Image (tube, rainbow, N blue to C red; front, side):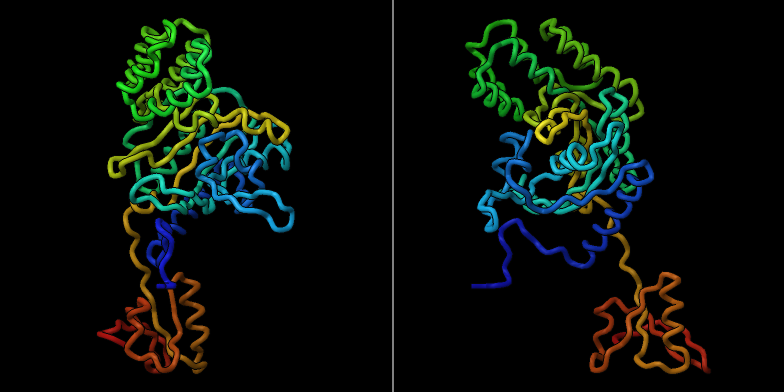
Length: 386
């Protein structure tokens, strides 16, 4: 047995990528902080009831579970940090007004989300609690666009949807939970033959509306098409109106609409959005409104936010240059330590030579050396191996 092998879709992060990930993490958290988003660090595992609250089937099958030997209760390793942040807002901070929180940490999935995806994403996100109006949705969508911009991964498309449309149709048609779940699944793939089969016994006008929902996709004209094709329901009209207001507020962004996009359906309660870029096959970031999640923690606060996987983002970011390294000799003579400290204070990377490793220092990235010339420490280029 090869003890150095890792489980499938689990991998080490090596120095170059680790450096890039850390630079992205710092840049994003600094940007969030400038906008008033306070950093929180939830634990890696919790009791399963807390981790899965409000997420239903969307997270249950993706969560690793284990038994706590202290309490005998089932615990889970988080597959999503957002419910944990909702718990912190509702139960620990207990503020009355608007709260802005951000986070970054590893999550673990039982299965990868795609062929090349990791089971250990590095999730980073921002959440806004306490405001019901679309102003909050506008803020977090703009923050997402800014986050992608500062990491040089500009969104080519921002898809907006609203789970309230499908929920209104399901309620109006009196759909049973099992059928609703099946419809939810085929809507994701826009599998029209299966959709037609599933709705054959659904009463009109809900049947025609469900068949029309995948066609409610595209630019702003998709909203007008939705009003024409869908029943004159107050909840549907309100959802389309909210999307129209968002479109007006975010008209400088590359917006599109998809009313059949129900990712996170059991979790979200209103506007949902996804960011895409040309070099990535799927959504690079997901978000939306989830007003009901905090109820399990004592307060059902209005909430909206987004998250993305830093490891996926780093693969799209341009490779940062490897830092140049200076090799300093061992010893204390002639102010050597002071010279090294001065170089590091100026941002230079300096490693001190250890005996017995001649000929290997270029492996550590050393391209220059610190040498004493005429009583003064100077930097010289390394020619060949050292």
